[in-house]
Amino acid sequence: MGNNGILLLLLLLVGDIVIIAAIWFFLNRHFVNRLKIDRQNQADSIIVGAKETAKSVEIEAKDKALSILKEAEEDITKRRTEISREEERLHKRRTDLDNRIERLEQREQTINKRQSLLDKRSNEIEKMYAQQLGELQRIAQMSVEEARQVLMQEAEKEARNDMARIMRSIEAEARADGEKKAREIIADAIQRVASDHVSEITTSVVILPNEEMKGRIVGRNGRNIRAFEQAAGVDVIVDDTPEAVTISCFDPVRREIARRSLDFLILDGRIHPAHIEKVLEDKAKEVEKNIEEAGEQAAYDAGVSGIRPEILKMLGRLKYRTSYGQNQLAHAIEVARLGSVIASELGANVEIVKAAGLLHDLGKAMDHNTEGTHATLGAEFARRYGVNEKIVNAIASHHHEVDQESLEAIIVESADAISGARPGARREDLEQYIKRLRALEDIANSFKGVSNSYAIQAGREVRIIVRPEDIDDLDALRIARDVAKKIEENMQYPGQIKVTVIRETRAVDYAK
Image (cartoon, rainbow, N blue to C red; front, side):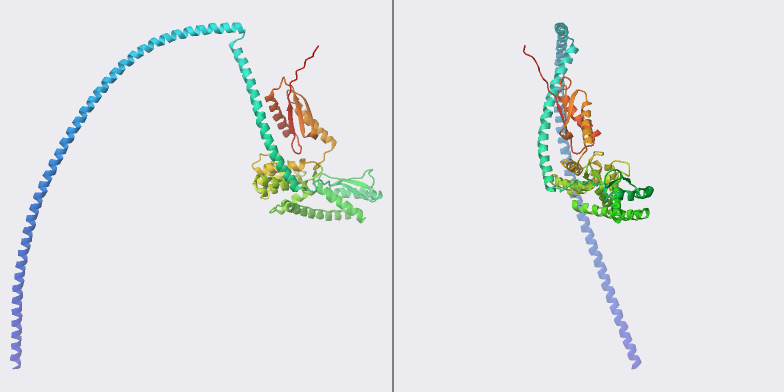
Protein backbone atom coordinates (compact mmCIF):
# COMPACT_ATOMS: atom_id res chain seq x y z
CA MET A 1 0.00 0.00 0.00
CA GLY A 2 2.80 2.32 0.76
CA ASN A 3 4.53 2.33 -2.61
CA ASN A 4 1.36 2.07 -4.60
CA GLY A 5 -0.13 4.97 -2.67
CA ILE A 6 2.84 7.19 -3.37
CA LEU A 7 2.79 6.32 -7.02
CA LEU A 8 -0.89 7.12 -7.20
CA LEU A 9 -0.37 10.51 -5.59
CA LEU A 10 2.39 11.31 -8.03
CA LEU A 11 0.19 10.42 -10.95
CA LEU A 12 -2.59 12.61 -9.65
CA LEU A 13 -0.17 15.50 -9.14
CA VAL A 14 1.22 15.18 -12.66
CA GLY A 15 -2.25 15.13 -14.05
CA ASP A 16 -3.21 18.29 -12.25
CA ILE A 17 -0.12 20.04 -13.57
CA VAL A 18 -0.90 18.99 -17.14
CA ILE A 19 -4.47 20.24 -16.82
CA ILE A 20 -3.32 23.57 -15.42
CA ALA A 21 -0.74 24.02 -18.21
CA ALA A 22 -3.36 23.26 -20.84
CA ILE A 23 -5.76 25.82 -19.35
CA TRP A 24 -3.01 28.56 -19.15
CA PHE A 25 -1.98 27.94 -22.78
CA PHE A 26 -5.53 28.24 -23.96
CA LEU A 27 -6.20 31.43 -22.05
CA ASN A 28 -2.88 33.06 -23.14
CA ARG A 29 -3.60 32.38 -26.81
CA HIS A 30 -7.05 33.86 -26.53
CA PHE A 31 -5.72 37.04 -24.85
CA VAL A 32 -3.05 37.52 -27.53
CA ASN A 33 -5.60 37.25 -30.32
CA ARG A 34 -7.87 39.73 -28.62
CA LEU A 35 -5.01 42.23 -28.12
CA LYS A 36 -4.11 42.08 -31.83
CA ILE A 37 -7.70 42.81 -32.80
CA ASP A 38 -7.85 45.90 -30.48
CA ARG A 39 -4.58 47.32 -31.81
CA GLN A 40 -5.79 46.88 -35.39
CA ASN A 41 -8.98 48.76 -34.60
CA GLN A 42 -7.02 51.63 -32.98
CA ALA A 43 -4.70 51.92 -35.98
CA ASP A 44 -7.66 52.09 -38.36
CA SER A 45 -9.33 54.87 -36.31
CA ILE A 46 -6.06 56.92 -36.22
CA ILE A 47 -5.67 56.64 -40.00
CA VAL A 48 -9.22 57.82 -40.56
CA GLY A 49 -8.74 60.83 -38.17
CA ALA A 50 -5.47 61.80 -39.85
CA LYS A 51 -7.13 61.80 -43.29
CA GLU A 52 -9.95 64.02 -42.03
CA THR A 53 -7.48 66.48 -40.37
CA ALA A 54 -5.39 66.66 -43.56
CA LYS A 55 -8.47 67.53 -45.59
CA SER A 56 -9.49 70.34 -43.18
CA VAL A 57 -5.92 71.76 -43.13
CA GLU A 58 -5.80 71.71 -46.92
CA ILE A 59 -9.09 73.58 -47.13
CA GLU A 60 -7.97 76.18 -44.58
CA ALA A 61 -4.64 76.76 -46.38
CA LYS A 62 -6.46 77.34 -49.67
CA ASP A 63 -8.72 79.91 -47.98
CA LYS A 64 -5.75 81.77 -46.48
CA ALA A 65 -3.91 81.79 -49.79
CA LEU A 66 -6.97 83.31 -51.49
CA SER A 67 -7.22 85.97 -48.75
CA ILE A 68 -3.52 86.92 -49.06
CA LEU A 69 -3.78 87.14 -52.81
CA LYS A 70 -6.79 89.43 -52.51
CA GLU A 71 -5.02 91.73 -50.00
CA ALA A 72 -1.94 91.93 -52.23
CA GLU A 73 -4.04 92.94 -55.23
CA GLU A 74 -5.77 95.65 -53.15
CA ASP A 75 -2.38 96.98 -51.87
CA ILE A 76 -0.98 97.09 -55.42
CA THR A 77 -4.03 99.03 -56.58
CA LYS A 78 -3.67 101.52 -53.68
CA ARG A 79 0.03 102.10 -54.34
CA ARG A 80 -0.57 102.65 -58.04
CA THR A 81 -3.14 105.32 -57.10
CA GLU A 82 -0.67 107.07 -54.73
CA ILE A 83 2.09 106.99 -57.37
CA SER A 84 -0.24 108.61 -59.85
CA ARG A 85 -1.08 111.38 -57.36
CA GLU A 86 2.62 111.93 -56.54
CA GLU A 87 3.42 112.24 -60.23
CA GLU A 88 0.73 114.88 -60.56
CA ARG A 89 2.15 116.85 -57.57
CA LEU A 90 5.69 116.66 -58.99
CA HIS A 91 4.49 117.88 -62.37
CA LYS A 92 2.72 120.80 -60.68
CA ARG A 93 5.84 121.70 -58.66
CA ARG A 94 8.02 121.57 -61.75
CA THR A 95 5.65 123.98 -63.43
CA ASP A 96 5.76 126.33 -60.41
CA LEU A 97 9.57 126.24 -60.34
CA ASP A 98 9.75 127.13 -63.99
CA ASN A 99 7.48 130.11 -63.37
CA ARG A 100 9.57 131.24 -60.37
CA ILE A 101 12.82 131.00 -62.33
CA GLU A 102 11.30 133.12 -65.04
CA ARG A 103 10.20 135.75 -62.52
CA LEU A 104 13.67 135.73 -60.83
CA GLU A 105 15.34 136.33 -64.15
CA GLN A 106 13.07 139.30 -64.75
CA ARG A 107 13.82 140.65 -61.24
CA GLU A 108 17.57 140.23 -61.77
CA GLN A 109 17.39 142.30 -64.89
CA THR A 110 15.50 145.00 -62.98
CA ILE A 111 18.09 144.95 -60.12
CA ASN A 112 20.99 145.25 -62.55
CA LYS A 113 19.38 148.36 -64.02
CA ARG A 114 18.89 149.85 -60.53
CA GLN A 115 22.48 148.98 -59.54
CA SER A 116 23.85 150.87 -62.48
CA LEU A 117 21.75 153.89 -61.46
CA LEU A 118 22.97 153.61 -57.84
CA ASP A 119 26.61 153.41 -58.93
CA LYS A 120 26.16 156.51 -61.00
CA ARG A 121 24.54 158.38 -58.10
CA SER A 122 27.24 157.14 -55.68
CA ASN A 123 29.97 158.58 -57.89
CA GLU A 124 28.12 161.86 -58.01
CA ILE A 125 27.75 161.88 -54.16
CA GLU A 126 31.47 161.16 -53.66
CA LYS A 127 32.35 164.04 -55.92
CA MET A 128 29.98 166.33 -53.98
CA TYR A 129 31.42 165.09 -50.62
CA ALA A 130 34.96 165.77 -51.76
CA GLN A 131 33.96 169.26 -52.89
CA GLN A 132 32.19 169.99 -49.57
CA LEU A 133 35.11 168.55 -47.52
CA GLY A 134 37.56 170.71 -49.38
CA GLU A 135 35.35 173.73 -48.81
CA LEU A 136 35.12 172.93 -45.05
CA GLN A 137 38.87 172.54 -44.76
CA ARG A 138 39.35 175.84 -46.57
CA ILE A 139 36.93 177.58 -44.19
CA ALA A 140 38.21 175.91 -40.97
CA GLN A 141 41.86 175.99 -42.02
CA MET A 142 42.25 172.48 -40.47
CA SER A 143 42.74 169.04 -42.00
CA VAL A 144 40.50 166.06 -41.30
CA GLU A 145 43.15 164.39 -39.15
CA GLU A 146 43.64 167.56 -37.12
CA ALA A 147 39.88 167.91 -36.59
CA ARG A 148 39.62 164.28 -35.53
CA GLN A 149 42.47 164.75 -33.05
CA VAL A 150 40.79 167.83 -31.52
CA LEU A 151 37.51 165.97 -31.14
CA MET A 152 39.28 162.99 -29.57
CA GLN A 153 41.07 165.24 -27.09
CA GLU A 154 37.84 166.94 -26.09
CA ALA A 155 36.04 163.61 -25.73
CA GLU A 156 38.91 162.15 -23.71
CA LYS A 157 39.02 165.18 -21.43
CA GLU A 158 35.27 164.98 -20.82
CA ALA A 159 35.46 161.23 -20.21
CA ARG A 160 38.38 161.61 -17.80
CA ASN A 161 36.48 164.28 -15.85
CA ASP A 162 33.40 162.05 -15.66
CA MET A 163 35.57 159.10 -14.62
CA ALA A 164 37.30 161.11 -11.92
CA ARG A 165 33.97 162.35 -10.59
CA ILE A 166 32.53 158.82 -10.47
CA MET A 167 35.69 157.43 -8.86
CA ARG A 168 35.66 160.15 -6.21
CA SER A 169 32.01 159.47 -5.48
CA ILE A 170 32.54 155.70 -5.18
CA GLU A 171 35.70 156.08 -3.10
CA ALA A 172 34.06 158.61 -0.79
CA GLU A 173 31.07 156.34 -0.23
CA ALA A 174 33.21 153.24 0.34
CA ARG A 175 35.61 155.17 2.58
CA ALA A 176 32.76 156.57 4.68
CA ASP A 177 31.16 153.16 5.22
CA GLY A 178 34.49 151.39 5.71
CA GLU A 179 35.90 153.97 8.11
CA LYS A 180 32.73 153.97 10.17
CA LYS A 181 32.76 150.19 10.56
CA ALA A 182 36.53 150.12 11.12
CA ARG A 183 36.32 152.79 13.83
CA GLU A 184 33.63 150.80 15.61
CA ILE A 185 35.65 147.58 15.52
CA ILE A 186 38.97 149.23 16.48
CA ALA A 187 37.40 151.28 19.27
CA ASP A 188 35.68 148.20 20.63
CA ALA A 189 38.91 146.18 20.43
CA ILE A 190 41.02 148.83 22.20
CA GLN A 191 38.33 149.40 24.83
CA ARG A 192 37.98 145.68 25.58
CA VAL A 193 41.75 145.04 25.68
CA ALA A 194 42.64 148.19 27.67
CA SER A 195 46.24 147.22 28.40
CA ASP A 196 47.75 148.79 31.48
CA HIS A 197 51.10 149.29 29.80
CA VAL A 198 53.01 148.25 26.72
CA SER A 199 56.05 150.51 27.05
CA GLU A 200 59.00 149.23 29.05
CA ILE A 201 62.59 150.27 28.56
CA THR A 202 65.29 147.76 29.38
CA THR A 203 68.08 149.83 30.89
CA SER A 204 71.75 149.16 30.42
CA VAL A 205 72.91 151.59 33.13
CA VAL A 206 74.22 150.11 36.40
CA ILE A 207 74.06 152.38 39.46
CA LEU A 208 77.12 152.30 41.72
CA PRO A 209 77.13 152.93 45.47
CA ASN A 210 80.13 155.28 45.15
CA GLU A 211 82.83 156.45 42.77
CA GLU A 212 85.42 154.08 44.25
CA MET A 213 83.48 151.13 42.86
CA LYS A 214 84.52 152.16 39.33
CA GLY A 215 88.12 151.45 40.21
CA ARG A 216 87.26 148.04 41.61
CA ILE A 217 85.27 147.22 38.50
CA VAL A 218 88.19 148.19 36.26
CA GLY A 219 90.72 146.37 38.45
CA ARG A 220 94.47 146.52 38.39
CA ASN A 221 95.61 147.39 34.87
CA GLY A 222 92.03 146.80 33.65
CA ARG A 223 92.14 143.09 34.55
CA ASN A 224 88.62 142.86 36.00
CA ILE A 225 86.82 144.82 33.27
CA ARG A 226 88.60 142.88 30.49
CA ALA A 227 87.67 139.56 32.09
CA PHE A 228 84.08 140.72 32.52
CA GLU A 229 83.75 141.98 28.93
CA GLN A 230 85.33 138.85 27.48
CA ALA A 231 83.20 136.42 29.49
CA ALA A 232 79.92 138.36 29.10
CA GLY A 233 80.38 139.45 25.47
CA VAL A 234 79.49 143.07 26.22
CA ASP A 235 81.18 146.47 26.40
CA VAL A 236 81.39 148.16 29.82
CA ILE A 237 81.64 151.94 29.45
CA VAL A 238 83.17 153.71 32.44
CA ASP A 239 82.91 157.45 31.81
CA ASP A 240 82.43 160.66 33.77
CA THR A 241 78.81 159.83 34.64
CA PRO A 242 78.69 160.04 38.42
CA GLU A 243 78.14 156.75 40.24
CA ALA A 244 77.09 154.84 37.11
CA VAL A 245 78.54 152.67 34.37
CA THR A 246 76.93 151.71 31.07
CA ILE A 247 76.69 148.21 29.56
CA SER A 248 76.48 148.13 25.74
CA CYS A 249 75.63 145.09 23.61
CA PHE A 250 73.54 144.43 20.49
CA ASP A 251 72.11 141.25 22.12
CA PRO A 252 69.56 142.31 24.76
CA VAL A 253 69.74 138.93 26.55
CA ARG A 254 73.50 139.12 26.95
CA ARG A 255 73.16 142.70 28.09
CA GLU A 256 70.62 141.65 30.72
CA ILE A 257 72.88 138.83 31.96
CA ALA A 258 75.77 141.27 32.22
CA ARG A 259 73.64 143.87 34.06
CA ARG A 260 72.42 141.34 36.62
CA SER A 261 75.92 139.93 37.09
CA LEU A 262 77.46 143.36 37.63
CA ASP A 263 74.71 144.27 40.13
CA PHE A 264 75.45 141.05 42.04
CA LEU A 265 79.22 141.59 41.97
CA ILE A 266 78.80 145.14 43.30
CA LEU A 267 76.64 143.88 46.17
CA ASP A 268 78.89 140.89 46.86
CA GLY A 269 82.09 142.94 46.73
CA ARG A 270 84.23 140.11 45.37
CA ILE A 271 85.27 141.31 41.93
CA HIS A 272 88.00 139.19 40.33
CA PRO A 273 88.15 137.12 37.11
CA ALA A 274 87.40 133.69 38.63
CA HIS A 275 84.40 134.92 40.56
CA ILE A 276 83.18 136.93 37.56
CA GLU A 277 82.92 133.80 35.38
CA LYS A 278 80.97 131.91 38.06
CA VAL A 279 78.53 134.77 38.60
CA LEU A 280 77.97 135.16 34.86
CA GLU A 281 77.23 131.45 34.54
CA ASP A 282 74.72 131.56 37.43
CA LYS A 283 73.00 134.68 36.07
CA ALA A 284 72.81 133.17 32.58
CA LYS A 285 70.88 130.20 34.01
CA GLU A 286 68.67 132.62 35.94
CA VAL A 287 67.90 134.67 32.83
CA GLU A 288 67.20 131.51 30.77
CA LYS A 289 64.72 130.42 33.41
CA ASN A 290 63.12 133.85 33.40
CA ILE A 291 62.89 133.70 29.59
CA GLU A 292 61.05 130.35 29.72
CA GLU A 293 58.70 131.65 32.40
CA ALA A 294 58.09 134.85 30.44
CA GLY A 295 57.19 132.86 27.31
CA GLU A 296 54.79 130.61 29.22
CA GLN A 297 53.22 133.61 30.98
CA ALA A 298 52.82 135.46 27.68
CA ALA A 299 51.01 132.47 26.13
CA TYR A 300 48.76 132.28 29.22
CA ASP A 301 48.02 136.02 29.13
CA ALA A 302 47.20 135.87 25.42
CA GLY A 303 44.99 132.79 25.85
CA VAL A 304 47.04 130.64 23.44
CA SER A 305 47.65 126.97 24.12
CA GLY A 306 49.45 124.11 22.39
CA ILE A 307 52.68 126.01 21.61
CA ARG A 308 55.85 123.93 21.75
CA PRO A 309 58.42 124.75 24.49
CA GLU A 310 61.10 125.70 21.94
CA ILE A 311 58.85 128.41 20.52
CA LEU A 312 57.84 129.65 23.99
CA LYS A 313 61.50 129.90 24.95
CA MET A 314 62.28 131.96 21.85
CA LEU A 315 59.19 134.08 22.50
CA GLY A 316 60.35 134.80 26.05
CA ARG A 317 63.50 136.46 24.69
CA LEU A 318 61.28 139.33 23.49
CA LYS A 319 60.97 140.40 27.13
CA TYR A 320 64.39 142.02 26.74
CA ARG A 321 63.74 143.45 23.26
CA THR A 322 62.26 146.91 22.67
CA SER A 323 61.28 148.81 19.51
CA TYR A 324 60.83 152.59 19.72
CA GLY A 325 60.69 152.14 23.48
CA GLN A 326 57.88 149.55 23.26
CA ASN A 327 58.51 146.22 24.94
CA GLN A 328 58.06 143.55 22.25
CA LEU A 329 56.69 140.79 24.49
CA ALA A 330 53.98 143.10 25.88
CA HIS A 331 53.36 144.25 22.31
CA ALA A 332 52.91 140.64 21.15
CA ILE A 333 50.37 139.94 23.91
CA GLU A 334 48.47 143.12 23.05
CA VAL A 335 48.38 142.23 19.34
CA ALA A 336 46.97 138.79 20.20
CA ARG A 337 44.23 140.36 22.34
CA LEU A 338 43.37 143.07 19.82
CA GLY A 339 43.33 140.54 16.99
CA SER A 340 41.01 138.17 18.87
CA VAL A 341 38.47 140.96 19.40
CA ILE A 342 38.60 142.03 15.74
CA ALA A 343 38.40 138.39 14.57
CA SER A 344 35.32 137.73 16.68
CA GLU A 345 33.65 140.83 15.17
CA LEU A 346 34.50 139.81 11.59
CA GLY A 347 33.76 136.08 11.99
CA ALA A 348 37.36 134.92 11.49
CA ASN A 349 39.17 132.08 13.31
CA VAL A 350 39.92 133.59 16.72
CA GLU A 351 42.43 130.91 17.80
CA ILE A 352 44.56 131.32 14.67
CA VAL A 353 44.54 135.11 15.05
CA LYS A 354 45.56 134.92 18.72
CA ALA A 355 48.43 132.52 18.02
CA ALA A 356 49.63 134.51 14.99
CA GLY A 357 49.38 137.79 16.92
CA LEU A 358 51.44 136.39 19.77
CA LEU A 359 54.14 135.00 17.44
CA HIS A 360 54.14 137.67 14.70
CA ASP A 361 57.38 139.33 15.96
CA LEU A 362 59.07 136.05 16.92
CA GLY A 363 61.88 136.80 14.47
CA LYS A 364 62.94 139.87 16.47
CA ALA A 365 64.31 137.50 19.09
CA MET A 366 66.82 136.14 16.57
CA ASP A 367 67.29 138.76 13.84
CA HIS A 368 70.54 140.07 15.38
CA ASN A 369 72.12 136.61 14.96
CA THR A 370 70.72 135.63 11.56
CA GLU A 371 70.43 137.34 8.20
CA GLY A 372 66.92 138.16 7.03
CA THR A 373 63.92 140.20 8.11
CA HIS A 374 62.22 139.41 11.39
CA ALA A 375 59.00 138.40 9.60
CA THR A 376 60.79 135.85 7.41
CA LEU A 377 62.92 134.50 10.26
CA GLY A 378 59.91 134.14 12.56
CA ALA A 379 57.87 132.34 9.88
CA GLU A 380 60.70 129.89 9.11
CA PHE A 381 61.25 129.18 12.81
CA ALA A 382 57.52 128.56 13.39
CA ARG A 383 57.24 126.31 10.31
CA ARG A 384 60.23 124.29 11.54
CA TYR A 385 58.30 123.36 14.68
CA GLY A 386 55.06 122.41 12.91
CA VAL A 387 52.98 125.54 13.45
CA ASN A 388 49.75 125.81 11.43
CA GLU A 389 50.44 127.10 7.90
CA LYS A 390 47.86 129.90 8.26
CA ILE A 391 49.72 131.16 11.33
CA VAL A 392 53.03 130.94 9.46
CA ASN A 393 51.61 132.99 6.57
CA ALA A 394 50.26 135.62 8.98
CA ILE A 395 53.73 135.92 10.59
CA ALA A 396 55.51 136.17 7.23
CA SER A 397 53.06 138.63 5.65
CA HIS A 398 52.40 141.15 8.44
CA HIS A 399 54.82 143.55 6.70
CA HIS A 400 53.70 142.53 3.14
CA GLU A 401 56.92 140.69 2.39
CA VAL A 402 54.77 137.80 1.10
CA ASP A 403 51.14 137.73 -0.03
CA GLN A 404 48.47 137.44 2.64
CA GLU A 405 46.48 134.25 2.07
CA SER A 406 43.68 134.59 4.64
CA LEU A 407 41.49 137.04 6.51
CA GLU A 408 43.34 136.10 9.70
CA ALA A 409 46.63 137.41 8.25
CA ILE A 410 45.02 140.77 7.45
CA ILE A 411 43.61 140.99 10.99
CA VAL A 412 47.05 140.31 12.51
CA GLU A 413 48.57 143.08 10.40
CA SER A 414 45.80 145.49 11.50
CA ALA A 415 46.18 144.58 15.18
CA ASP A 416 49.96 145.07 14.91
CA ALA A 417 49.42 148.53 13.42
CA ILE A 418 46.88 149.46 16.13
CA SER A 419 49.20 148.34 18.93
CA GLY A 420 52.19 150.20 17.50
CA ALA A 421 50.42 153.33 16.30
CA ARG A 422 48.10 154.24 19.15
CA PRO A 423 49.20 157.31 21.16
CA GLY A 424 51.81 156.60 23.80
CA ALA A 425 52.67 153.14 22.53
CA ARG A 426 56.04 154.10 21.08
CA ARG A 427 58.53 156.88 21.39
CA GLU A 428 60.82 158.27 18.74
CA ASP A 429 63.78 160.61 19.11
CA LEU A 430 63.78 164.00 17.44
CA GLU A 431 66.41 163.15 14.85
CA GLN A 432 64.56 160.07 13.59
CA TYR A 433 61.30 162.01 13.61
CA ILE A 434 62.74 164.80 11.43
CA LYS A 435 64.31 162.28 9.04
CA ARG A 436 60.98 160.51 8.59
CA LEU A 437 59.13 163.76 7.84
CA ARG A 438 61.82 164.84 5.37
CA ALA A 439 61.70 161.43 3.64
CA LEU A 440 57.92 161.75 3.24
CA GLU A 441 58.24 165.16 1.61
CA ASP A 442 61.11 164.00 -0.64
CA ILE A 443 59.04 161.09 -1.92
CA ALA A 444 56.09 163.38 -2.70
CA ASN A 445 58.28 166.00 -4.41
CA SER A 446 59.85 163.37 -6.69
CA PHE A 447 56.66 163.13 -8.79
CA LYS A 448 56.13 165.28 -11.87
CA GLY A 449 53.61 168.10 -11.48
CA VAL A 450 54.05 168.49 -7.70
CA SER A 451 54.70 172.06 -6.60
CA ASN A 452 54.85 171.62 -2.79
CA SER A 453 54.34 168.93 -0.17
CA TYR A 454 53.94 169.07 3.61
CA ALA A 455 54.21 166.26 6.18
CA ILE A 456 51.73 167.04 8.98
CA GLN A 457 50.16 165.39 12.04
CA ALA A 458 53.49 163.97 13.23
CA GLY A 459 54.03 162.21 9.92
CA ARG A 460 50.59 160.61 9.82
CA GLU A 461 49.57 162.61 6.75
CA VAL A 462 51.32 164.17 3.76
CA ARG A 463 49.57 166.89 1.77
CA ILE A 464 50.66 167.38 -1.84
CA ILE A 465 49.88 170.52 -3.86
CA VAL A 466 50.00 170.00 -7.62
CA ARG A 467 50.05 172.42 -10.54
CA PRO A 468 46.54 172.47 -12.09
CA GLU A 469 47.82 173.24 -15.58
CA ASP A 470 49.94 170.04 -15.55
CA ILE A 471 47.74 167.68 -13.52
CA ASP A 472 44.03 167.00 -14.08
CA ASP A 473 41.62 165.29 -11.68
CA LEU A 474 42.40 161.77 -12.89
CA ASP A 475 46.15 162.38 -12.65
CA ALA A 476 45.62 163.65 -9.07
CA LEU A 477 44.08 160.30 -8.13
CA ARG A 478 46.96 158.49 -9.81
CA ILE A 479 49.58 160.56 -7.98
CA ALA A 480 47.90 159.84 -4.62
CA ARG A 481 48.04 156.09 -5.28
CA ASP A 482 51.62 156.16 -6.60
CA VAL A 483 52.89 158.21 -3.64
CA ALA A 484 51.21 155.87 -1.17
CA LYS A 485 52.71 152.83 -2.92
CA LYS A 486 56.21 154.37 -2.95
CA ILE A 487 55.94 155.22 0.76
CA GLU A 488 55.01 151.58 1.49
CA GLU A 489 57.98 150.31 -0.51
CA ASN A 490 60.65 152.68 0.82
CA MET A 491 59.76 153.54 4.43
CA GLN A 492 59.23 151.78 7.75
CA TYR A 493 56.53 153.35 9.93
CA PRO A 494 53.87 152.32 12.44
CA GLY A 495 50.19 152.48 11.49
CA GLN A 496 49.25 154.22 8.25
CA ILE A 497 50.03 157.49 6.45
CA LYS A 498 47.30 159.46 4.70
CA VAL A 499 48.18 160.93 1.29
CA THR A 500 46.12 163.98 0.24
CA VAL A 501 46.56 165.56 -3.21
CA ILE A 502 45.22 169.12 -3.58
CA ARG A 503 44.50 170.57 -7.02
CA GLU A 504 42.94 174.01 -7.29
CA THR A 505 42.65 176.63 -9.97
CA ARG A 506 42.75 180.31 -9.01
CA ALA A 507 41.51 183.11 -11.26
CA VAL A 508 43.08 186.48 -10.35
CA ASP A 509 42.35 189.87 -11.87
CA TYR A 510 42.82 193.46 -10.80
CA ALA A 511 40.39 196.36 -10.93
CA LYS A 512 42.13 199.53 -12.07
